[in-house]
Amino acid sequence: MSEPLALVRRQVREFLTGFKGVEGEVCVAVSGGADSLALAEATAYAAKRFGLRTRALVVDHGLQDGSDAVAKKAAETAVNLGIDTAEVLTVDVTGPGGPEAAARKSRYAALREAGGELVLLGHTLDDQAETVLLGLGRGSGPRSVSGMRPLDPPWGRPLLTVPRTATVEACAALGVEPWTDPHNADPRFTRVRLRTEVMPLLEDVLAGGVAAALARTAAQLREDTEALDTLAADLFTRAAVDGCLDVTVLASAPPALRRRVMRRWLLDSGVPELTDAHLRGVDALVGRWRGQGGVWLPGHLEVRRAHGRLKLSEPVPTT
Image (cartoon, rainbow, N blue to C red):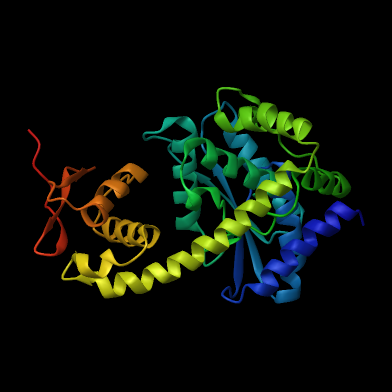
C-alpha cells in the first residue's frame, strides 16, 4: 500500500474512532475530485471496522454543460470504491455574493438536508491554509482566521492535516482518475488565484512549509477562540435579561468577551450580516458611553442604551 493512501485511511479511521455520535450510517460529500474520492474510499474502508453503512452525496450545481454526467460518474466511482450507496443532489444556484458564494450556499444546504448526523467533507491542509489567508486578507478576525473545524456537526473534516498532493497520489494508487473541475483553474475565482499564484509565491519566499504553518496557526487560534467563547457563554447568561443586555454586567468584562456576547445576542435576535464595525459600534454603548444615540444595524434595526440595558428596536418599515 502506498504511504499517501495509508495516510488518508489512517486519518479517516482516527477521526471516526474519536467521533462517538454517529450510528448506522455516515455520509460523504463527493465531487469526483481527488480529495473527495480519496476520502470516500478511506471512509468505506474504515466503516467496515465500525459496522457503519456509507452513502455518497454528489451535488450537481448545473453550472457547466455535462454536469449531470460528471455527477453520475462521481456517484458510480464512489460505489466502485466501496461506498454502499450514492445519490445525486441537483441544486439551483442563485443568490447574492457571486457564483462562488451562491454555489457554496446551495451545496451546503443540499448536503445538510440529505445527510444524517455526520457528513464528511474532503477539505485538506491546503484548503485550510487558503481559508486562513482569505480571513487575514479580509480582516475577518480570529474566528475566521482560525479556519475550519475538524468537527462542526454535521460536518466532519478528517483530512485537514493531509496535503492535497497525498489525495492525488492516493487516487493514483487506487487506479482512479479524478475529475478536474475547470472552475479550479479559472482565475476569476479568488481561491483559484490564492492556490495558483499566492501560495506558490509564499512557499518560494518563505522557503516552504507555509501551508502547514498556516494550518497550525488556525489550530492555535481555534483553541483560543473556543476558550473565549466558553467564558463569553457564562457572561451572556449573567447579562441577558428579558431580551436585553445588562450594561452593568457587561461593563466590567474585557471588550473581546463583551463583543462575543453582543454577537450572540444580535444573531439570536435575527440581525443579519453582522460586521466587526457593527459590533464595535454596539460595544461603544458600553465601553465608551457618553450619552450617544443608538447604532443602526442591517435589517433596519437599532441598538440603543436605556435604563442600564442594551435594547434592540423593532425593524423600521421601509417605503
